[in-house]
Length: 178
Image (cartoon, rainbow, N blue to C red; front, side, top):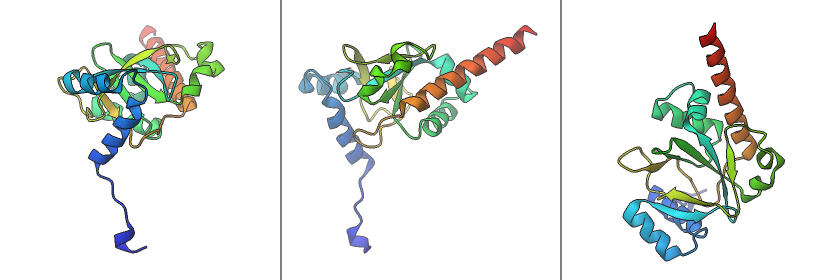
């Protein structure tokens, strides 16, 4: 392949493509763009192009074995194979974007995975602008940014992450009680 045949996409171009894709989940795209511009978070519908699995920070930190944000982010990126995750700093919850069909899987419908909830059809979620990729004054940011439109996490990997976190929490509680 000749060098002139190589197509390079900048981070900004990828964020723009991801923004357009995410905005397909907005009830009003123009309003969602405004929400991102003004407050950094837009209200998007779950269950159409994506669902989201909400996981408490304590479970994620236990699975990662640390509360150091850069280490947690690296762990999430590896454990979820680069799939997109954002954190709501105020509520101390992580949101993992998965295919919309995940909400129909028995493991999430029956709440077999404790401490996690799959948000599907009928749910709305405050999603940070794709350019929010670092902790700052923002309420919410992408700790594992969406690299390209439609690239989502594998629900089974999320389930494994949650179960690992719960196991680590139980082991720590048991060790503290001895």
